Image (tube, rainbow, N blue to C red; front, side, top):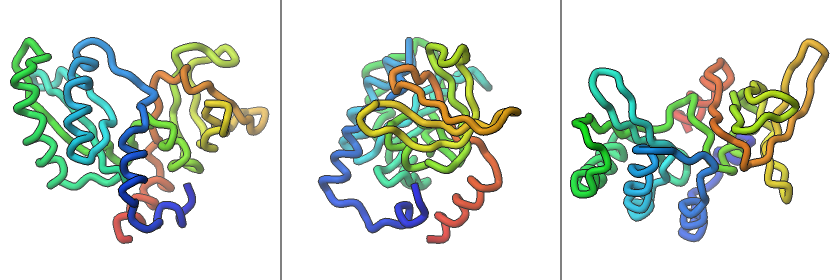
Length: 196
């Protein structure tokens, strides 16, 4: 996404609905999937998008929920509001059979890429991509996002190799995990966006 697109005017109601309805390409399994199924509708009702659910085992169990507004932002106040809304729902549905600490946060600067629009929004930035099925004999790639191909349902990545630069295309349904790489360009963009 170009700087002009990141500085676009506020979203209309229809645009927000469309963004909230966009499916995630990466799905959790096990307990994480049960939690995602419970919290996703609550988040949508509040006007947020679920990015990822993860059960982490550090310092006891931590249930980490990454969420964002349709415009990609997430303040501390947003995290508090989401936590207050989903905590009682999780208490009632009780998807985790052990004690845990609930952590709600933004996706962060080196965020996971979980929707088609994430790959377009962050085109031009470096990412790590892991696939469920090999492409050209590999499952892991690192390179610069070129966005998605309209009509083909895939993600394009520019990879720097010893022999030169190569464009690689991945089918959307082969994606297992993807995230931005923390580097100077991403930090500069984050600082610039924070000042806008």
